[in-house]
Image (cartoon, rainbow, N blue to C red; front, top):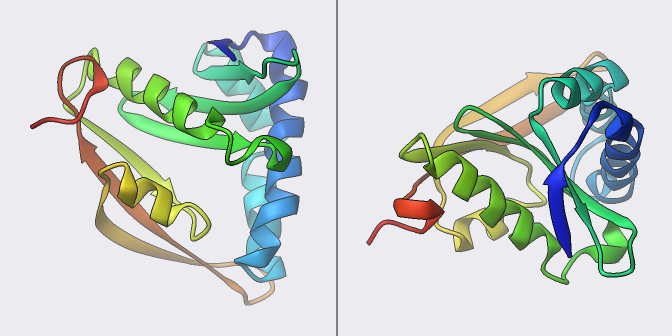
Length: 160
């Protein structure tokens, strides 16, 4: 497994990882309007802008294929997605640890918006709920998510 900074030419790969994961996972947790909102939120323009700004990281599996991605902006972890075929194999945990270490170089806390699908994972990793948000989508469905935070120690390790 390798994690590296994505370059502008990787934007299409990051977009594919993001969209395929949303379409495979989120319909099991959210109504159609919320899934569509997620998909539009992670648009080609948004991904390309973040990649051009140097905020996006790409995880390549041992087989050489792109497996996941994470975006780090300030102390926020954004767009952490792992393709379904690589889930449960440590790629998400590695991306999260990587992001936390980057953030810990400058900030004491990491913050993220958490989907229902990933909430238990983040709780196990020491994140706690700060707030709860609800967005009504265009067709009347609702997107509900938690805003979570974790206090980081030196080098991204949990503070004792």
